[in-house]
Length: 270
Image 1 (cartoon, one colour):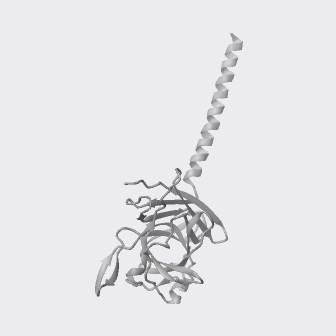
Image 2 (spheres, one colour; image 1 turned 90 degrees about the vertical axis):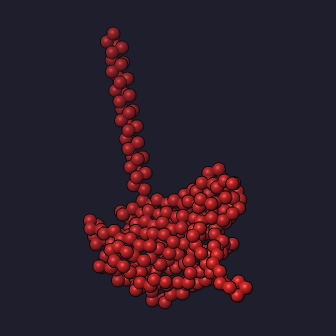
């Protein structure tokens, strides 16, 4: 009787220890998931189907514990690029001083309408010190820009509306990605030489929709000006059961480099 009681007590203690370890592992896993330094998501437009064209929505969120972002790159899956789209048929040309100074006077129409490729929003932190940060917000637009070396150029213009109204310009470019990907897109997040209020600005998040359905260009046909929707981003005819694979590469001040993969659900025939 005493022996069985002792065995029962040992068994109870063992179960309690296993439960405690399992709970600890679960808490660690949950904490890690919540505290992910970089979160990256990609979504196809609601009109997406194999072999057709659609928009792409990119979402990025960066932990406030990381240094400021200095560059953001996106790699698209094979078969999904901009070479066969009708996006960016005009070029946005801005003074070099705007790109070098980053922050400049607000222009309401800085670029030709036919150079617009995508729109979205962004948030950033004004980091006065590690314990004193202020959140800023902006509307962003992606344009086809001047060539960067031998690469097709891009220009991101951010119109801030909090804590002040001004305009930021960031240069980027398209490039041939590693094998297995369709397109490489890089945006340089250049530090502001004269930051607002003397506080360095660090990107917190952004949402960018490229090739959205509401995008409209103008052209002249048979002597008449008309409005049309440019061809958006091609959707591969085949798709892995795991979805379409994208990759974000984020570089930070000080040399840190983080890679985050994301998968978009495969579109279905309609």
